[in-house]
View 1 (cartoon, rainbow, N blue to C red):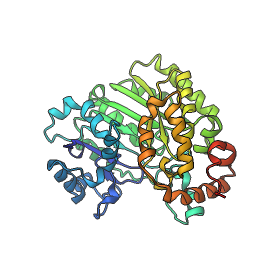
View 2: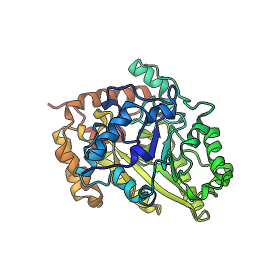
View 3: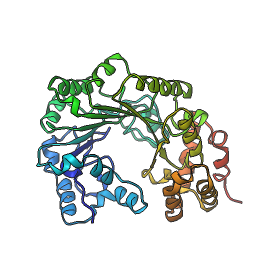
View 4: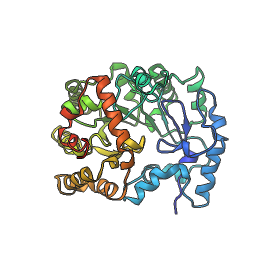
Length: 379
């Protein structure tokens, strides 16, 4: 039966400022007002009805309705966040006695320099103008942190062991507050027992001040978010420059050779856009002495899921995934495509794709010609 320590030991603050037990949690499944750092304190979140409901479900051996992502992954033999945390923090979880957060994920706002096609204005400030033009929704760039936020967080995490820093882009978003937090753990002789994990679009290489802070921590993991290579990268991570990103990836490898506590990895978000081109990312990673990327399934919005394609496209994709060079890695996605059908949202996918192409002066047809054939109207 399911049980998860995360509601008691972790906090997640999204780029929009929403507070939840973890990054996989589906706040929208609950009728209560979502806790948000712009209007709520951490204390108020800990007493929120949503968090109480989640804890109650786990204590009764039930999957909470906000935890479907982990449930679905486990049903498809993928190691979920719940299972990976159990292994990673077992030593600390076994001894946890309501003594604060062991781990946390804090996006210090949504400042970003890219408009990745699978992202939105809530997670990237660069999306603002395009989102307003196309969807007629004005989502302003978010700098959610309050003057007292760092001190407030520290009071609830005296025994912190791990901190995730996603984006926006972490090398741009809330940098002074990030460094204030790191300096606290350094000055109080706690950094040596804390690991940091950054999710970066790899367009910005860290300066010397970052490196001087990182040397005190137990481990620094830099996870490069790369969903495609060359012209497909530049389409998916518009207006990123592939040559610059590739050069930074090489520089990170060089840095790792001189920085013992630095760990590097690549993550690839699998969506309707890139499901047919995953071989390229994996081959590039291996050729550049990285491990094969971690492949994460895009869950929302539904019309961007890899399962949104119609039957003819799915038949084509299953042939590639079942018999390709990296078929062992693709097994979970074969299961997804065989089992799940989101093709009722295909027209939304196609309609929005063409609108964004027009706005950006890009061409899915030229960039993804193989899959474009399945985008056409049927005769």
